[in-house]
Amino acid sequence: MLPLDGGALSLDGGFWGHRQLRNREVTIPHGMQMLDERGSLDNLRLAAGKAKGDYQLPLFMDSDVYKLLEAVAWERQRGPGPEQERFYEQAAALLASVQEPDGYLNSFVQVVHPTERFGDPAMGHELYCAGHLFQAAVAEARSTGAADGTLGPGQPKQVVGPVADRFATYLLEVLPDKPSFVPGHPEVEMALVEMYRQSGSQPLLDLAEDLVRRRGRSSLTFGSFGPEYFQDDVEVVKAGKVRGHAVRALYLLSGVADLYIETGRQDLLGACLDQWDDMVKAKTYLTGGVGSRHEDEAFGDPYELPPDRAYCETCAAIASIMWNWRMCLITGQARFAELIERTLYNGFLAGWGLDGRSFFYVNPLQSRGRATRLPWYRCACCPPNLMRLVASLEHYIATHTSDGFQLHQFAPAAVRQHLAGGVLGVRVETPYPQEGWLVLRVEEAPSGTTDLAVRVPSWAREFSVELNGKAKTTEPSVDGYVHLVRRWEPGDEVSISFPLRSRVVRPDPRIDAVRGCASLERGPFVYCFESVGDDAEALHDVEVQSLDRGAAERAAQVGPEPVVELTCTGRRLNIDRSWPYYEGSHHDAGGLQEVRLSAVPYYAWSNRGPSQMRVWVPEFRR
Image (cartoon, rainbow, N blue to C red; front, side, top):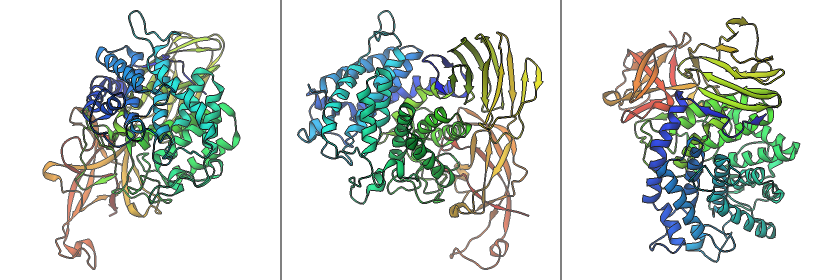
């Protein structure tokens, strides 16, 4: 499978289209303000000699600027905004003024340790920052479109690209002479491959492969963090399991997947598949979030998935989406697109407040009322990372082959993609994720036969297809997609239905922390039980009645957001003791009170004030 051509798909409103607009109009401008107020831009001004004062830590704040520049670059596809363009051009000019004559660029090193380039492989983040700069440049090149980098009459040329090119040239000159240097935070690997795809420069691909090959020498340590934390304990192709810092691990695997795509090395693909299986079978939360441990933001042992201590960093969810997208391109299998969907609607989206200006860094599956979204973080890696993903979201919707089109995620969209036989134009209409149906209308058709493939959600209990108003008997193939192969004509219409109903989910009993509990899902959404306001202490002593029949549905609002709320019967344990243990049953300990419990989509929690929240609730049977 191949990504669609740049600009071939545009979101047309709907759940994600509206969020993309919110990102453009609210979240990105908020990020521009925060970068100025919280020191990221001042650090660059210090390095350029345009400001005085102390350097603001953490030392990788340059990367936050680069991620926001990437978000603005992707937004250019939908037309430049004056304020964003002004920020973009001024930031790029600032970067150019900071960059050393030899191409090196890192404000922390230039201000604080000017003679110690690459002096701290484990935690210096020099190549991590460089990678984000390179990805911003790639986004700029792909979004501007024209060969000379112009957007149109009177619009600016590419301005981040030249800065990135000079830095990349510098790395190509110096890193081969530093064979023991291993970057402690992967990111540059996939960025170098993307730059290679954009430029065709083989040395960029060779450097990415070399940096991956260097891992496994146990050279990286920092304090209590050993080589495993940095994915440096064993060679990438021999690892077999996903481990260590979750974001580092998944950024590295994204780069490994990219290298497989470009080199065809089977050992790289095998490493990705082994670690994906290890992650999905026993190290992934119901929300798609990953990272069980606060101590080192890391994967835990198999089935170590505590809900209240879940780390599930928003950046880790983004990294998972990026990696799974590459695995989907490689294999054409729906399981990777399905994990993208689970993570996108839950583990990722929960990190973004409905106001567009507040965020979670950590995304637990249980809160006792102390979790609060913040407008920014001292370590602000997640908010601008979120912005760039949302700005580029149309790239994760669909793919093509020479004679086919594959729809992986469901959103209203217009598609116009060149295939071997000509242009395929398709308009997708759907109310998903609120309702489970979609219509694909063919507006342009290539000559010859074309394979139109649509992912079938594994949770869909019913699935039906109509072609031009007539029922069509078809089943998903082994890849998880329903394939419709024919000579298409403009006006052809495919209707697909998979009704959404609530469903109960129970954990593997090896997940000790939630054994005997249950949760609810509907469509792509994981649900959580939330108590707000006067009921803010209402979830610590409840059980839910057996959910085998699912839950009742009703329309509700969470702030500005219309949602489907799920309700079910539960009971409260009326226990008032000075000692939290007792003999006998709950009834003997103080009695039970029947209650009605309501659940909302997990992404929407903590948007109505202080609240308790639980994804998993103890379950009892009559």
